[in-house]
Length: 134
Image 1: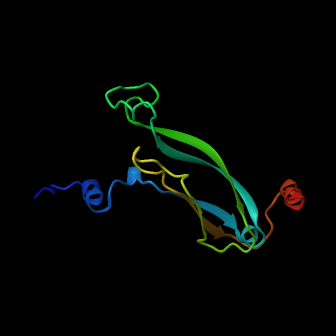
Image 2: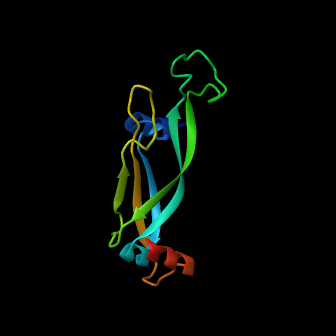
Image 3: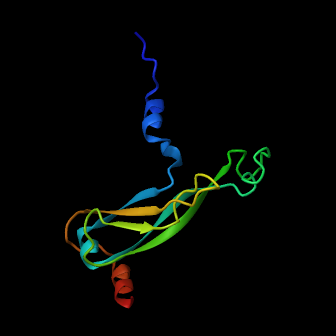
């Protein structure tokens, strides 16, 4: 007997569409040394926002979003991780996540810390000087 159900459809039925989640969760990997003494990390984030032209007139297929209704924005975020940060610590940036509809507020950007490695200082000499100047 052939399976009639698409597994993706079953998950969508019970949990909703994962592709359009409002909250954006990212993992930031740091060493034990960086967790103990603090550091700054920079990384690129892609978030979805509603197309300003299509949200006004849905019948128009604009060039900005190619008629999809949403736009992917890429930006760079700098996060300052304080000293004594523990594994699985979460930093929440309210209203910096995805926007799934024009009627709802933007979701949150959540950055979860993942600590790995040894306590050895792995910073370059330039990074050490930058830390001292802060």
